[in-house]
Picture 1 (cartoon, rainbow, N blue to C red):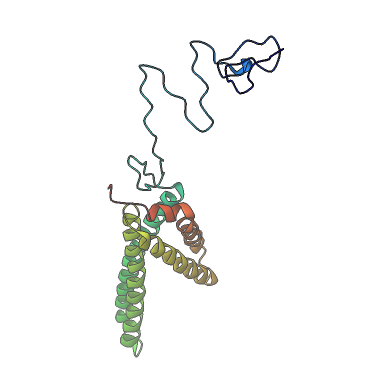
Picture 2: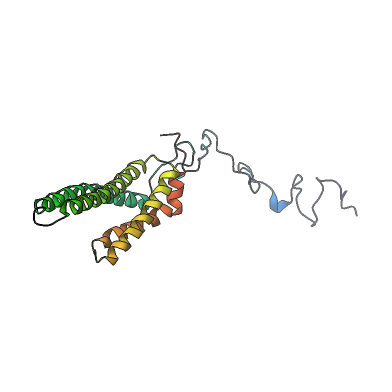
Length: 214
């Protein structure tokens, strides 16, 4: 009895009594009216009348250069920026007050020049010391204000400058604490937090972002 040509793809299947599958095994025949399953790794075709979905571009929270990327300042940078504003304004006011106080002390010492010898020289020294320290504090205040203003649009140099400022503020606050100036605790805390916030990786990504879209 002949079972047909085994090389014929339209011949009878392996099992006796099976119907020809037109080249497909009977258990893998595609159903009429249903599309075949797409191979693995190939997206399924869209149905008739439905356009394919547009490709989605990656979104970078810090403006990575992709079209339509969302640019948002990190929360730590925002907090550090507020601290820079506060320290800057306070230091500008302190510098001005120190210069005024130096002049007032010099006037008071000049009034007593008739009672004490060499008072004029002492008054000049005190005035000079107050003016010098006042100018230094005033310069630090202007520095902090400039960095706070440039945080929104500046580059990585502003981030490094803020870290240096925070470091110097921390050292100066520790020196003031040695002199029992407990108000320096506020500037000490601010200085440390500015270093932390501006040294984080998200802050680096913010300051190194692509600013061509702005």
